[in-house]
Structures are given as structure tokens and as C-alpha cells.
Length: 143
Image 1 (tube, rainbow, N blue to C red):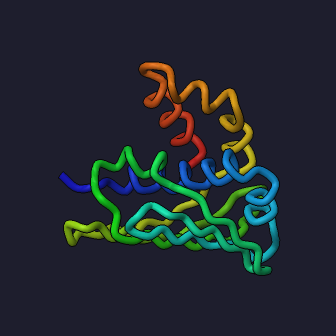
Image 2 (cartoon, rainbow, N blue to C red):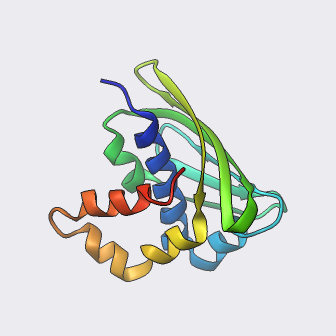
């Protein structure tokens, strides 16, 4: 069984949300900055988020990657600002097993982050049965 396009898109949204949850204003400056940004994830789960004006943050992406069920070799995603607060993205996932998937889409990053960030969201993730609900909430912002 392979990773589906929707699972890959939700994982991208989880990474963006994790960046905000763990890095706050630094992540927001990259996400809402001019010129877009990129995310690169290596085999160890280290995420590097870089803005077009040189801002970079590094954090552990394992909490967002764990739900995939496959060991990631490399992930690369490029984001550009769209209209009305949307962010367009193109990404590729390469897995240790030799498979890969490419995805493209968009999401409303402002509403996504606002819907589930900070301490309340972190607490909700630890409650039984809440992972599916949080994932469904993320899916509503992805196109």
C-alpha cells in the first residue's frame, strides 16, 4: 500500500503547522513573507524551512511524518503566495523503499494555522481519537 496524494498533502499541511507551533514568529515571518518559501526534509526527519529573503528555521518533523507509515528518504516542497491568503505548493516525497509521489495543491494557511495551533492543539493531539479529527480539520483547508 502506497502513500496517497491526500496523505501527502495533509503531511505538508502538518509540517507547516508544526513549523508554526514550534517556531512561532520565526515561522510566521517565513510563511507570510514575500516571495514564497521552501521546505526540505532529510532522512532523519530534520526539516529546514527557508524563506526567499534568507530566513531559515530547522526543527524535527517526526510528529508530522509519523502518520505516513513509510520511512522518508527526502521531501522537498516549494510554496508560492496565491490570492486571498492561499498558498500554492508543489512537493515530492521520496521514500526509503524506493517509491515516490509528487503532489500539487493549495491551502488557506492563515485559517489552517488559526484553527489548530499552540498549546490547545498540542493538548488535543494527545487525547485518544483526536488525531483523525485534527487530520479532517486540516483536509478542509487543502485543495
